[in-house]
Amino acid sequence: MPAATTPTRCRHCGATLSELARRGGRWHCGLSACLHKEEQARISALKARAATQALQDAAGLLPPGQPAARTVVWLEPCSSALVPVSDDDRARHAAHLRQVVAEGVAIDRSKLAEASADDSHPQSGQLCGHCGGRCCQHGVAWNAFIDITVLQQWVDDHAGRTLDDAAHAYVDALPDAHVHGACLYQTARGCALPRERRAWICNGFACPALQQVQAEARRDPLASVVALTMHQGHVARAAVVTADATLAFELRPAAPLT
Image (tube, rainbow, N blue to C red; front, side):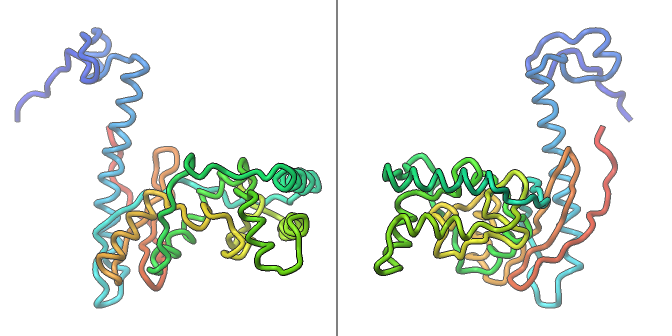
């Protein structure tokens, strides 16, 4: 068996390694940029090993005739803790909607991600339900993306009503509690607004993971996909998403990375 190679230069920037680094078997110099690249490489290696293991584990969960999953998508962790929608929350939201009506505020869609969601395959909804609405966290800063276009659509659907009526209707639709740190309309069971009353981007946005699932479903309507959620360098949740269900499972642990 050949002797282990002793590192002499940082594999990221090429700088000569200190004697302490060489003795410790480190392959990086310790500068912040190189430490960041080293951590990225470590996480990439962890993800690759976890993905291989997850595909193997998920195969045993699928019913006979169900195609084996061939794709792993990665989700960001998402809080599910609920907090009350306070009187201050309602007052601020009402003030925003009054401003939208008074100034005709319209969100510049060119600055937002292009709509790409596809609801024609049930795997999409299964994935979003499993995720819990990470993308909805953006809604808190953007006031659920409600602009004059959204309010005008409400008016168009309610003959004889006004934009002020629309603003009041959206305030009245606020739930008693919402997900902490997320959109005021996000609840434990999803959006408190019916789909036809949500902003364009809420219905159309597709994160990279959702786009991958949609691509698999278009390839094969019966396709299954493994969804993994990483938190603080560890796989916190694992599930196999099919057209019919989301099956959570415990990922078998692998040996720690060195």
